[in-house]
Image (cartoon, rainbow, N blue to C red; front, side, top):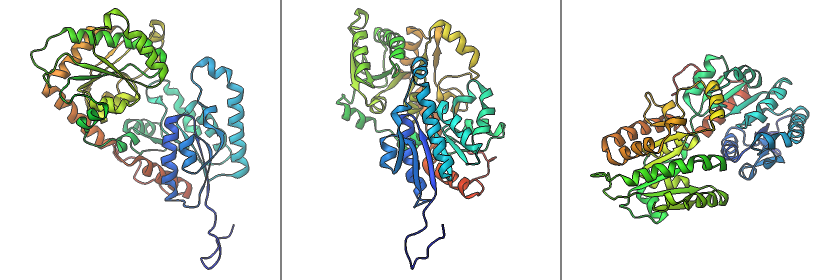
Amino acid sequence: MERISSRGMAPAPGPVIVLVAGEVSGDLLGADLIRALRHHFPHARFVGIGGDRMVAAGLQSIVPMERLSVMGLVEVLGRLRELFRIRARIREYCLNNRPAILIGIDSPDFTLGLEKQVRDEGIPTAHYVSPTVWAWRQGRIKGIARSVDLMLTLLPFEAQFYRDHQVPVRFVGHPMADQIPMTTDQPGARSLLGLDADSTVVAILPGSRGGEMGFLAPLFLQAAAWLVSRNPESTRRGHWPPLFLVPCSSRARRLQMEEILVQPEFRDLKVCLIDGQSRNVMAAADAVLLASGTATLEAALLKRPMVVAYRLKPMSFQIVKRLVQINHIALPNLLAPEPVVPEFIQDDATPEALGEALLERLTSDSRVENEQAVFTEMHRTLRRNASARAAESIAALINGEPLPDDLTEDEG
């Protein structure tokens, strides 16, 4: 279509940009990305699959995002035909409308296959949030290279992995690092939660899924009971025993935790269950005991001393141990120059080991100061205005321009 002059009438329409997200976290990223892309393409049309936040940002969602939000092998198998139909529908839309780009946001099991189908038809593709290909099943990198014209990573070491395999990549930073202030307002978090400013507080996060909580919550509470049985000469706050805060991601998790807490060995613990607010709970704490996962990065950005643990059923652990190709499970240890977070896996995760590591973080000022210095530097590395950097990278790809910044620079 010809561009119409400013004397006249409406501006030429902008490009069609297709985005596909399958989870709540992807919906959050996608909404911010749409807003950032509008600075480059004010008249763009955004089409694809997204949740309420992406729709509010201007996405026309062809299919409700909830149709992609499936967890568990049995559940996925039961919905496989529908998932293939949805993928075919988005592919057909792309072939009929020839968008400027297709952007898959996380959810790699769904989006990477779609990206390959569309890229094979000559439509550019980008993927936002790297799969954990650097950690396990590294052979997947060959399929990713065939699927994407550009990988956008949240972590610097991920970008280096793709460079090593000649996949176009840009480290854009982590949106969580943009959202969380450099200095944590611990008194403010305590005030919001109605906590005594002088209490010794330990946050316990045994995972957001029922299986995780059932497996890890008893262990974490046993570590809490071990901790309470100690009588340290002094703590960083001076108040003993600690108050334990457990954020519950849903009513189901709260009921599950209540059932665990009625066991006789836990009845004397001072435990407070909080609905949601995991970030406020961690910000209010003097130390955090948590399962490995994204929450460990959030705790680091909040500058909280932490202890990380994970257990699996023995057979699952033996399988995973053979597949995983990294030496640490806590994200802060993968990002720091040297491991700084104590982590305990499988048989090493005992109440005594977890309790001792927590006690050290409640009594040692020097230990805490060292960890917080490392976390602060980590925060600076990840605080890059991720949505804006992702949008400018996608705009360069659409416009056929070189990526901003040389791909070989040290961005981390």
